[in-house]
Image (cartoon, rainbow, N blue to C red; front, side, top):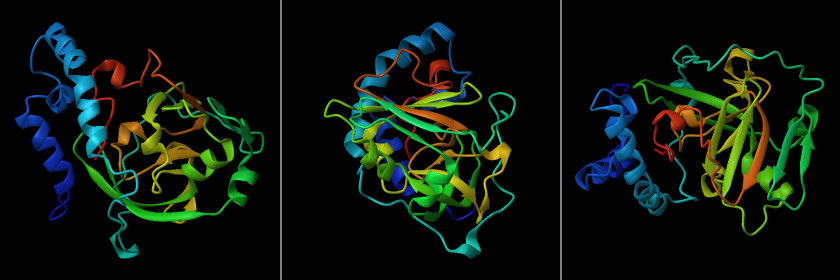
Length: 240
C-alpha cells in the first residue's frame, strides 16, 4: 500500500465481512488450512459474500481520481498469465456477443473513433502493491449501449488472446469508470500491458482487469469456469 493512501471504503467492507466470519481474503493468499478445507469454505461462503458485496456496491458512485502529478509511471507491474500474444492491430476485432440484441465486431479504428474517456486512478493488486495510472479508452457502458444487452443478461465474460478468461457482474461492467483501454499515461498501450485493448477500472482488483481482450460475451448465468484465478480459489467479485 502506498503511504497515506488508504482504502477506507474497501476496508470498511472487508472489516464487515471479517466480523461476520465470511471474508475470503485470507483464502486468496493461501497457507491457512488444508486444500480440502479451503475449497469447502470457499464454496460455502462465496455465494453469501457475492450477495453482500453486490448490496454494498453503488453502480453510479465514482471511485477517487487523481491529478496528473500523482501518476506513478514505473509503479505498475506487468504480470502475464502466459506469453505476450502476437496481435495484429490492423486485423484485430473486438467481438461483443451472447445475450445482446446487436452483436458487434469492432476494429481498433472504430473503437478509437468513439468518445475517448481518460481517467487517473489507482490500480490495486491482490499481491499488496498499488499504482496510480492514467488510462484512456472507451467506456464499456458505451459499448453495451451499442450492443443492447437483453433483459436477462447478468454477467460479462471476457476472453483474451493469451487464453486468460474472467467474468464480471454486469452492473460493475457498466460502471462509468470501467474502460476498455487502449492508452496508458497518454501513450498507446504497450504489448506487455495488454495492447491493443484491455480492461481498466478502479472498482476491481487487478486480476479482474483482463489484458488482450478479444471477446466480451454477455450471459444470464456464470459459466463453470468463472475466471483463471477464481478457479484456483480467488474471490469472484474482486471489488474495491
